[in-house]
Image (cartoon, rainbow, N blue to C red; front, side):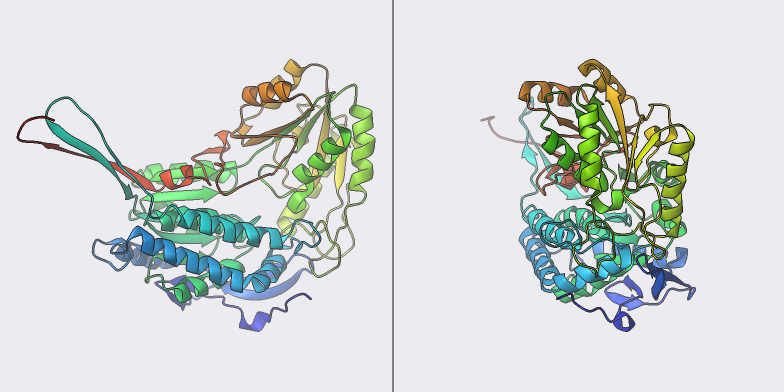
Length: 495
């Protein structure tokens, strides 16, 4: 039975210094259910003044001698585990709230949806909590009679700007290492999906985190710019488009040269060799592209298929995709929900029109699904050329482009011929061939006989214009740590 969400009781204010407050300017914006096109509620809109208040709270919480800074690593660990427990307690509510605000299915019977996201949120918070009391420096042997060592210290006040495609999961990917390393943070969530993070604000306070450690602002890009430019923010972490990522770098440079990590866009290739198992290839391509309505930065939107199996793969892929059930989160057995909003809906339809105009063959879909909600049919193009718009630009929708290739070298060269380098995948029954190909692909993650597979312990991030820095694993902790060297001459005999 699906949990009911009473929208009249949702928290819609800004979360600053452990209190929910209205915005200084009193402005609000509406958040819309993309399955119905109906307004869910109005949310307080953060402006520059609210950013100032939130950063001041985070700065005060980071001061030496503050309740947060006085905590041991094991204390931070316990608070994080408590937060994970509270999220697990409210899991059913959050699954529905996220589905209502974002549009993705809840996910039943092994299907992807918010239920999967919540599992990963809880899993990652518990994983990150385990690092809170294991942040280590090292003692270094040096020439002379000198004691030298390093210590890892929290970078300070962090800004975190998160996207709308995985609102809670991206919140967790940022807040986990931030809290584990002892930093404080101001979040700016997407104006398209603000609601689930605000509920987490309630749980932050209930878990017992000191005031100012976590602050959550809802708002537009202007609030994100104010955060990225703020002189009291020591580090900015951004997940979103490459275009905005360039701006975040600019804002950081023009202000106080704050540290920056970026997880940006992609145009991920999948190479299907002639020895591939067709069923594996089809199932992997489906998960790689149609997961989350195609709104995934790692979506396998360029599928290179060896010419000897191309037609067989296309026939099987089209047949498989015809079985994708499209509908709202509260409908039964749904695989694909709507695009997140009207802007994204029209953008994706525009790319489909461009593909047809440039001569690609539309093999499936290509139209709006139904007459209400921002639903788009699962769409497959063949005869796609490398210089077509749909082959080069990130579509962020359920649009698959299939290419032919002749040789391994050709496939690898064409797969690498992009400004992006977030992820890639290889489908082959020959392990040595697959691993050799993986090593030649310029991407931060390469999957073999799978796609969109993640684990809390495995680092994730991009090459080239897909960003820099890594999420997940211990490498995520490094993003929020400074290395301090301490050296002291010793007396007495050297031993």
